[in-house]
Amino acid sequence: MDLQDKKYLKLLAEKYPSKQAVCREIINLNAILNLPKGTEHFMSDLHGEYEAFYHILNNCSGVIREKVSLLFHDSLTDLEQQEICTLIYYPRERLDMLQEAGTLSEDWYRMTLNQLIEIAKLLSSKYTRSKVRKAMPEDFAYIIDELLHVQKDEDDNQVLYHRKIIDTILDIHNADEFIIALSALIKQLAVDHLHIVGDIFDRGPYADKILDLLQRHHSLDIEWGNHDILWMGAASGSMACIANVIRNNLKYHNTDILESGYGISLRSLTLFGANTYQQEDPMEAALKAVSVILFKLEGQIIRRHPEYHMDDRMLLHRIDFEAGTVLVEEQSYAMNDLDFPTLDAQDVYQLSAGEQTVMEELRAAFLNSVRLQKHIRFLYEKGSMYRIFNGNLLYHGCIPMDETGNFEGVEMEGEIYQGKSYLDYADKVARRAYIHQQDADAQDFMWYLWSGRQSPLCGRNIKTFERTFLDDKAAWVEESNPYYRYYHEEKICHMILREFGLFSEMSHIINGHTPVKTSEGEQPIRANGKLLVIDGGFCKDYHKTTGIAGYTLIYNSHGLRIKAHQPFESVYQALRENKDIESDSRLVETEQARVMVRDSDNGKQIMEDIADLKKLLEYYD
Image (cartoon, rainbow, N blue to C red; front, side, top):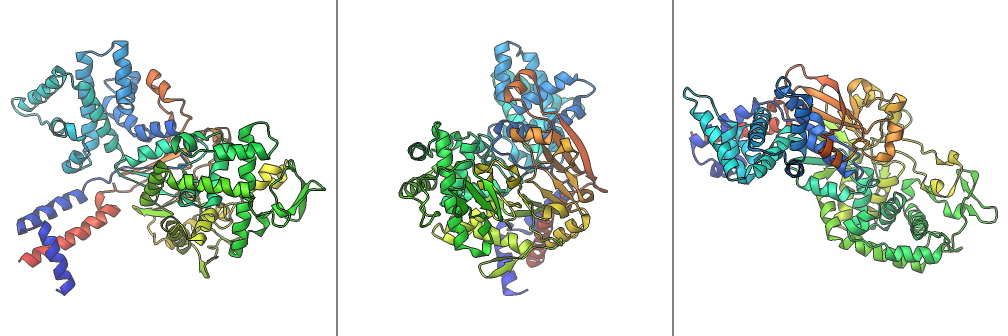
């Protein structure tokens, strides 16, 4: 035994101070290895749609409804089953409504408590008693633990004990709080781990509320999306990212998240826009003002970074004011607006004094918003460019490829990166931008990750200027990275998985970012099941395009199931009419043998711990 091992074992001995303590832990860990793997829930592209997200999080993409049906299909009607589900999803709100309607009674409480206990028993069966106990709300942990582990005996003593606990809960009028506690436990047991595969922000109004919910979640990870990285860049102080964030929210009439959610005032921008441009609507004037600022700031970044190869995106100096046209990729297009009073003929990409003042004020507001900074720190703590989890590869956008289907080489800071090394580099620089906010190159790269031609989060050639100032839609076409052609091929997906060290036939790529156009016959399952696109389609603006409200994914010990969801109407209707999101479940892959904890990443760590404990046993001997 070398000195390093000896030091480690001495530290381990502090936690397990006797041979029997070591033996007990080895027995415990070996038992855990033989439990079924916990359920993973994958969601993507939430885009601020809080109510739909909250409902799918509550119903665990239909898992709870399936468990209720499994237990009560012979004893309860469909309506009665749905009433139990609604109670679990929204216990406090539902109880208030039932109280108001005068339908609560002692018999209802007794029946409901027993039903909830049965559901909790079923869901807790795949976990250790210790893990279930840790998941219980602290105030009721002892009582719930007793109720979940009642055993029938010869004289029915345990059953009577169980009944007495329920009687006491009713006698002291504590049933409502107990139902709320049981419902919380059921939801936590239904999903062991949550994956958010990017794009929490923009389009919908309540990304801040979604992040508040995620911060309270028991176990999750986040793979950054292009909209997330944009807000992360803005919170790091990048003026180009700030201008993009504000432009997006003005465009989607979603300024409440800035002003009410994060305390970022747009007053100076609005006044500047109204005094500078001819639009009658102040918000339209603000949108015009921040758009011009954005194109100037982007031009400055592109000039600083020739390695971005984006000179063709600098269009302000290509405007011919006499002809009323702009030159885009050697073709002349008519402009729909020629009101640009802040352009300096000497340098059209230089901010005017008024624009500079507005942007400095906005930058200070983003840097000093306590709630925004708290949410962005959470994104950095829980997030990354990609994640490998239980043999699957998760990322939001793409792995940039060239026209031949090979990984594209991208030169950054004098080095060439491709495939995994490029995503690792992007992750490192994104963190650098937040930690070292004076690092101008890292700040610029945050903007590049949002809209750069070879960005793994963007994946297309963004035409913001053309979509703003040109009516000819031929100029609006945004070419996608070749990845989006090649990811239909199984051999390409295998190549990507191997690049990230995944060689198992059971490995998959879980991808977000691109809405699946179901109405046009597109399917979320690509490359013979090796790649799954789960753009959640939560954004209401997409529903006409996609035909549904997107997809989520469930991976339990039996296999993978993709869930197609219909649009969610409202929490109000869910409460009033017991309306759930209608979901179709499609089996992607069934495991030949049930996946146990020993087959998971956690299981590998447990086996390492067992090996260390066995060395400690030898040390004691």
